[in-house]
Amino acid sequence: MSKGPAINADLGRPETPDETAARKAASSKAYRSSQTVRNLVAALVVTLAVVVVIIALVPRGEPVAAKPIDVAAIAADVESSMGSPAIVPETDDFWRVNAAELQSGAPVVWEVTLAPAAQDERGFIKLTQAFDADASWAPQRLNGVAPTDTVRIGGREWDVYRPGAAGAEANVTYALGTQAGDDYVLLYGSRSADSTAELAESLIPQIRTVSEAR
Image (spheres, rainbow, N blue to C red):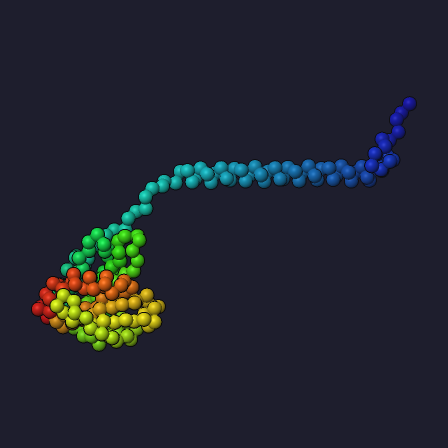
């Protein structure tokens, strides 16, 4: 005796041909979908493995230290060009030189940017020597600020500038300037008055040399 069509438990009756076809199609679609997910997961695992290998192969070490700026050599070229001594700050364990250049213009300016070498120290001072210039040049560097006072450092009179809000954008809070023969020397930046004065005093012998030469 032959068996009749199987009863579908969900339907309570045999499936029609259309229902059977629909069920098989849905099952096939679900299978393909699960395979796609598996393939994506496998591809992601492979990609992560490649990234890990690349990272492992990249050489690591200490950052390359910036090449020291030879201020003396640059200053020698400046002296040759200008026919006049160029002031060179003495860098010790405290100061490092971030930049040194001769800037064209009226007047021509020799500029050295100094910053503390220690990580826990902040601020900077720019040493500028304006050739064939006087105190009237300084406001060009200080956003129009004129000297407010004078102070005696190393036996010389120095103009005192306190840019205040006018120097905020350039982070300039204090400046000292003095005439050195035909040149004007200006120290300005964000260091304290005492720190700027200490640098000024260290430059006195060279300022005297410039004064005598010009």
